[in-house]
Length: 548
Image (cartoon, rainbow, N blue to C red; front, side, top):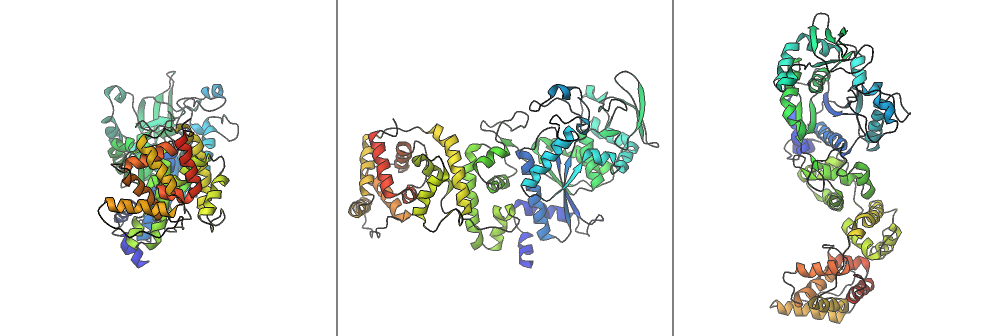
């Protein structure tokens, strides 16, 4: 444990760098509250989305890194701002006319359009908790409605009334002149209608802890700021929540970054040190536009998990969180294969490299072994040439390639085979475009076909390549199951047929035989697909049957 902690204290992996920043807050002693608090926030106006997953996952990675370098206990709170007023009716729910009658009411006072929960807010909170539980996150759930109504927020709300002018000074600097005229940090709930009111506050009484205002009809009301009868505007709420809970760390997207000084100032005016924060870059769709849950662009959690396991998404989320990244279907195969490459590398790495390996953080140090003896990219190409409809079709080839493998002994591979068939059917198959070979390409393909399975022809082409390069290479042992031997034949055919650069030869193989612009290491593909099957595939390409 000492070796691990020592390595973690100097690791350049970003979760450890962030964890050390949090630890520095308590270099003079542990927190009075007895624990370090990590928080993530959630707006429950819609269903959880991929950004929610990323935020909780990344915060959890930092929390676990902190637990390696410190013995101070930790907590993670997922806070739902379910007291927010419903500003518009969502377009993807039933009973929209009924919902329209409850606009501006807190989400926990809006009836559930699905008829399953106490309110729309409770429904969305349940969806969030189910979502987090599905991925095994360890967290405590907090509802803003309960936080305000239970009195847990009262001390800070009364302090906000006492320090109202200082808080307003911070906020007014960030607002346009027109907005300044009507703005208040307090949003009272109407005593009769229950709606969240965006109205000017006529008077704040810090002694009684009340605010006075006129409603839309001109009637004057005075209500307490405590007990859930007022809520704070969202920016003051952010900082006030930090102060009330004693939050030590919170991350949020780049779109919040300009508000960070406001959140910090609010928290400090209310008597608490601002937490450490981490601003991550946003995800982009296939066109380079910011992903938005309201516009529905990009890729959802469910869509990713249709084509790959959760761990591959966690791997994608780990990499370069401060760099904007395209999050679309075409990133999935690469994420799957890179995740398994890192799994395979992990056991042989020294502890310093293990702590920098993404799989350490994905699995909180309990890193499993990979059973992916065939890459996801190779499975996709196998599905493509085999026109696979079910994963069992791929297992016929896999068993011949690796007789010891089975779905039971290689569960990662079995799941990946099913995902590969789905991905092929939905993305690869519709995009396949075959072409006929040119004269040069035809001659090379014919020789490759003839070399496969024929030792004399294979050794002859290897010898010709060696002579062309001005040397006499020792010829390898013929082994039709050896990927390296097969790759050397493919390489030699391309060289002796004058393909310059050689990648043009590999492009020929992919475009003529697979209908794609890129593909697998071809020797490995032949070993998996089979010698005779590959010869037959080349014949079909030469006859024009694939491009017909």
